[in-house]
Image (cartoon, rainbow, N blue to C red; front, side, top):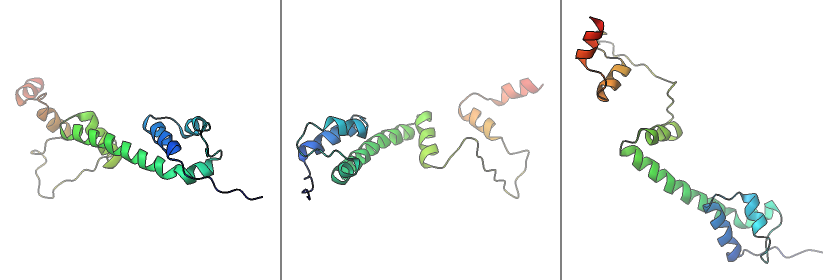
Length: 133
C-alpha cells in the first residue's frame, strides 16, 4: 500500500528555522517537531522537505556574523582580522613568504618584527641603540 508523500508544513518550517537560528542540533529539532501533524520521522524526508529552510537560515546567520567580524577587522580589531585572514584569506602565522627585491640593500631592510614593533610604538631607534651599546 502506497502512502501519499508528506506535505510541507509552514508550522514545522517555522520551528526548524527557529531551532537553526538558536543553534539547536538537527537531531533535536527533528525530535521537537514530532508533535505536529505531517512531521517527518526519517532524516531523508526531513531534509527533503526542510533542507532548504535549514540552508537558508544557516546562510543568513553566517552572513550576519561574518559581517560583524569583517567590520570589526576593518575597524582594527586584531583578533577579528586574524580570524578573517585565517578562514577566508588563506593566511597562516606559520606560513610566510619571503620576497626580496633583487636590487635591495640588506642593511636598509628592517625585519618584519622590527617594522611591526615600530608601528605598535614598542620599538624606537634610541632604545635599540642603547641596548646594543
